[in-house]
Image (cartoon, rainbow, N blue to C red):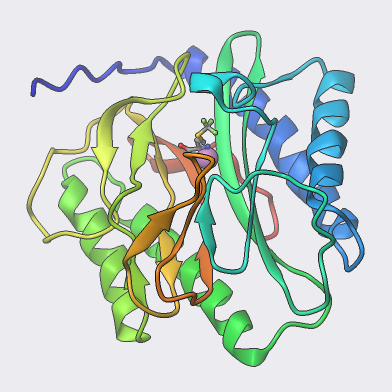
Length: 254
Ligand code: MF3
Ligand code: CO
């Protein structure tokens, strides 16, 4: 179909950076908060309270009926994990995804965390997934095409023996959580839409240690790997400028 991409002004990008700062501060707090014994529902409450204190709103809550402030996806859960009474245990990995609304402008970022001491294999999955996201971000420059991003992400994942989830993709974002364009995490260099100044979108690869196929839980939301393998995700929201991509959800030190 026709792509209706909403190009953002410098001023609008600054407003999203305000939401992005709140969001990156939350992720900083989660580094200490997430540890063995913590229930994933406690992460949801912690984030919701913190955002309220900062005058921000958890945009995911109520979005298409989604019941929580964050997605908390543990181990083989790929995305849209529901926060529950499950107590995190040593060696788990967990992805926390959230969208922060400040004065109507949105920031979206997911991050995978280690719980206590994780296996070297899990550590490597997290590192490679994070690197794959940044390799995609490097390609997000004016004149490149979306396929350049997808190809870079896919190559790094597959070079390391992992697979890229196909069913969930990055997306334009601004005052709406999901705008055009769709940003695939696989593809061919030189293909797809040309990247322009003022575009704001997410790059959010979900990478499985095993095969790419998934199943959806009975709750209608939670995606998990069909083969039971671990899955990781890192997501940043970026703005395209003449000077290259600005990472709106930058955490400063990683
Ligand atoms: N933050 C997610 C994304 O990157 C959206 C989660 S879906 C929701 O697109 F319904 F839970 F909000
Ligand atoms: Co997200």
